Image (cartoon, rainbow, N blue to C red; front, side, top):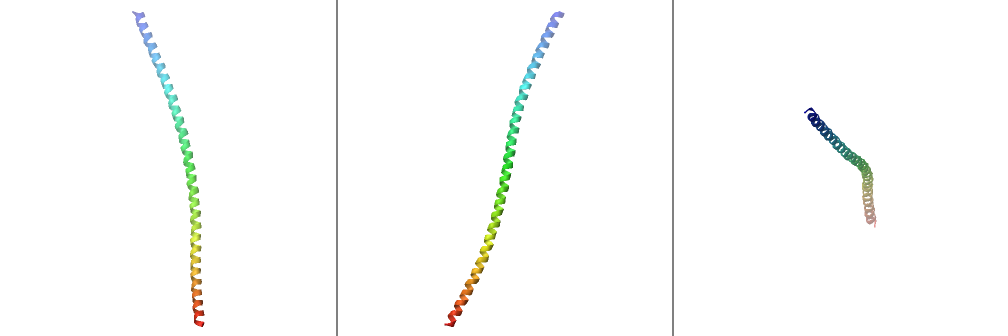
Length: 105
């Protein structure tokens, strides 16, 4: 009877050891898969971070370009207004001179 109990206990122990070994193997496989997934996600995140940095640099470059255009356009508009006023004054003077010449005839 004792031998039977010992044999049953030995079998139960061996089954428990096999189950534990399988569980460890499954856990190891799962950990390896999750580690691979994590590494892939970290690479993707790094790529997105780099893309974000590149986009930010691009936005800064565009903003600087727009500011330069605004300054150029502002200068052109100011110059245009000054020239327009100068021409209007010149036209007035020419009309006055023409009127004076017309009166003297």
